[in-house]
Image 1 (cartoon, one colour):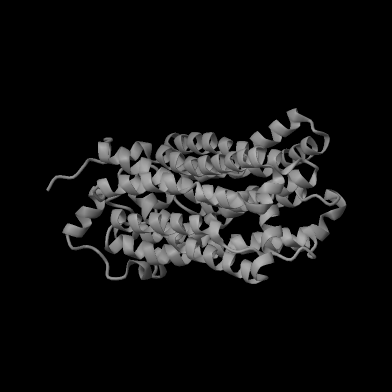
Image 2 (image 1 turned 30 degrees about the horizontal axis):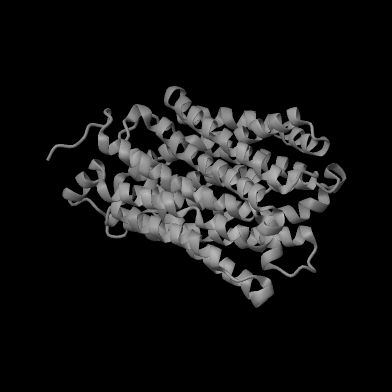
Length: 446
């Protein structure tokens, strides 16, 4: 049987990229709802006697259960993607996590069932996280294996940019619902309608995947009888283990970078006095900036190399972090829209841009037999440490109070800088992967 050459685009390849972009967009779309609606969910799910800041962080911790479950999903569905195939696995994951997101609209409130409301919310977040972990495990491998080698960084940027589309679209939806219904109605019932809006793109993504075959690279390995019995276990045997640990360090930094935006943006803006609807709007614009940043920097990595692009990104982000977040804070405080726009653009850029290389880089680090497992669990491994920002932020809130004066902009800056240091070191320890053959990946450090 003949196989598609790695240097040419095909109709199936374009379809695979579109389907994965839609699936990954839905991940961010749902995430955006939870983070944008945190002040509302805190009042809906928790007792009103709690201090506002404490309820805010407890609610963030509840959504963190989605993130905790992702490594579980990456292990389960990544292994399934390496055994059953990328395409069939992806049809399961898209149905699972979009369905759980929609069911969030039906959970009871604290007024109805007490603390059980928060427990139900957390359990549903955990189940949804399992499916999401499987989504990018098989999905990123699926799209990158279909992509020409000289365009993998660009494709990865498009995929990560789709995450930005989800953030931006989610923020826009929240702002629209808030503007139409009003804040009182959003607290009463409007937040439920928001969660239901993710069903339509899920149907489109599922249909596209149903119509597409699996990747030529995977089918080739399967027909040659080279599939592993339990691909996931191979990640913990040298020399692949050293590759996995290097990827874990890189991804830990990247998750710190992302969550510095997702966890703190709305809090920084609303604490500075900006209404919730406006805060969600600027947060959404920051998400749209990530689309441009991810795609552009992914393409740049096709030209200058992944390793160099990661290191340049780390140095730049570390330098710019404090003035960028402070500009955003000042803009919200004084209703200075120039500073608000500058902060929105720069924070959205520096917290997200290096993510554009991730799908290509991780796919280029693991062999076909264990690529879905390696991409998925390697991606999710950044959550082992990076998932707990709300817990790390609590003592920092007191430590940085003299600087922040009750806001959290400097805490957000701190995590952005820490992120840059971690992923910069992680990239330095790894090799250059640009242009490697998907059929002949060398799993080594340098």
